[in-house]
Image 1 (cartoon, helix red, strand yellow):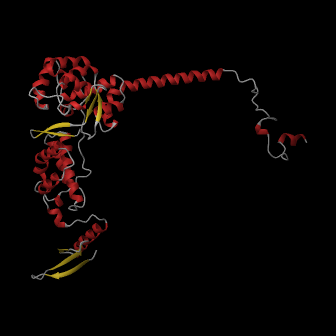
Image 2 (cartoon, helix red, strand yellow):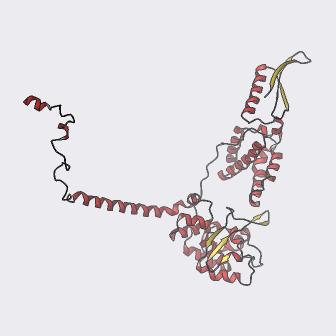
Image 3 (cartoon, helix red, strand yellow):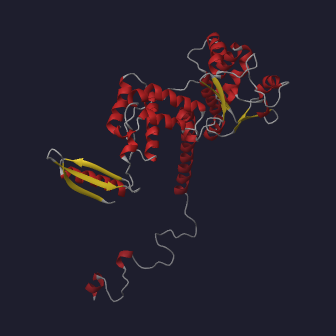
Length: 406
């Protein structure tokens, strides 16, 4: 990079040091300083940024966060509509009120850390603070890739810890009581509690994806309500999966499939429209919870219940992961590690039994008689002479005892 510092005299007789350099595109940049030391430092910083490829044009970082947020949100075509809608809500509620008028180049790491701390101090939950920080960090990361700022000031900001709530599990008796209280929607309750489907997956399940012969459900679609509209798309992990269908649900679901085309929704409202979680919960689920004598039960607790019933039936962690559609078995363990405590106890008991058996066999070996062909003395076959310490490899060296006798 070509750079220079020259001294210039202003009209009032004072002098300034003008530092100039050209960027990789050939465009010239300059700045004036009272001290030559400051001019040299500015030029050195620009040179270092050029060498390390972290240099950005100063004018590109003058875009405000509010203007850049519009460009960033418009570029989020890879996420689901529900995720994009959630991003928009976080921007409007938490990010733009605090950062909208700031220029990208003016955002500092310390200010971002203070902002996260203020969110917690103002009553935001740890998960909310982390989500707000994540959206702001994604926004700034795009600015880095676009060459507007040299680095992401939101990186490595201290974030509050999120404590996961203890999952609520229903027993089989409670599930049946809740299903009976739900009346005509009892099979919906049982389907959620015995298969672990997300509600959006259940609402998007179509007739052609129910295999009654193999008793399998193919989960390939999900529906979410976004700004009052239903948006159909892929499941949460964007992958299809097969879920076992309990035999007890074959009859009720067969009745719902009667006279329906293959592409029709399996479960609908009385008007034939798709189920919406908010309406279904208000009209069906919450009244059934009260009638069944339960408390603090949500539709998502039925998904937790399916996991607990599967583990109680002997399912492995990999089977539970596949049934629930988790991205990895590690994620399943993060949520349901407590369900496998009994497995650990059984494992410890089996290992203890094996250790005791090995110890008993070892005692029998120690007390057994040596083989008949083994010498009773401590010598090996072919060994002669006295103890090993009295022998030598050199026959010319006599022992001290022989020297005294000679």
